[in-house]
Length: 231
Image 1 (spheres, rainbow, N blue to C red):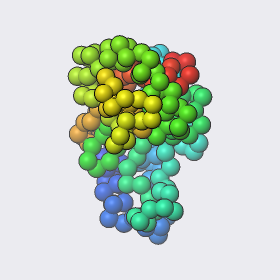
Image 2: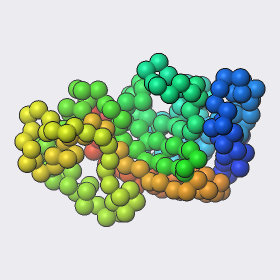
Image 3: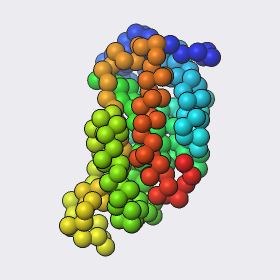
């Protein structure tokens, strides 16, 4: 690892191209050091370079560059309940979560790279029921504040929409004709900017990602405050 970051190398992409063709334990163990050198450690360098920017506009969110136990997701898949038994993730991702968060369900900023491209943004992935109830109550109790996010031209031009899977029916206690019923149905809330894979090779990737994450501030501040955490 190094103290600087100037983009992911072409070897990063080649590794994942090879992994998709050889997703088995024997191949991975023979290429484990290669994974560390061209994918894991460069991601740690990226996170380290992003940390000062994050501290500036979202100081309660942590960019932890450790290769184990930090912001990088492990390459190993949990296949216990999946029909797909491939043991390794065919993507690289990190979550810069709130300092109060203990797992991936906490509020966080996110970056994901696979062979289809790169995407980055933030939100909450399947928050537990009590937290989800708080978010719905915040949208219900502060509809104008939520609408202001939806009407924010800079925010929407960057991310396009607020996304996240949801219920087919209105959640209990809320009318189907609620002004923000489609958002109230959500069980996951996130915003994401998508870019071509070649973006990861750019020397100014850190600055570009940081600028985008900062533009998510209205949404991330609302989400963070809704679950009772400081932004």
